[in-house]
Length: 207
Image (cartoon, rainbow, N blue to C red):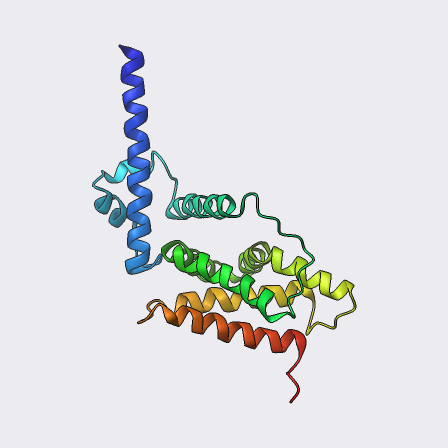
């Protein structure tokens, strides 16, 4: 009997955690991370405020849990796909594929992406968090740029800095373009980013 009771409590706790994450995801998408309070999350989840602290110590920790779920989803999506560093990002199709993949992940997970962006910007500038996050999030792009540099291609700057700049463009535009009137606008954004970045990497086209 005791074992059954413990199992029931564990199941309820798991349900509460999921409810809190779902509510936070919804509110972050509607109000943004900074304008959402813990009490807003618990109210939307239909849970007591105290239940929040049984699962998370802070709103930031909850956001990390959402980010972990996002990263797991991305990992599952690319599992089994070969992705060697030997990509030539001066090739428009290859560059566009990479930018489109990043943009799609951000758009499909906009509430979490926006929350992460707002949290990063609001953090202490001296913490170095923004730079660390950009470096981690653009590691794949950096590896491709390092490959180009090893082949003697002249980049507009250090591969790490160039990759971070590309990532910053994606993150900022995702935050700025919260709503698009037509799904085709996503293609327009990706094409614009592709051509903008391409000319910086390969130089202007000759006529």
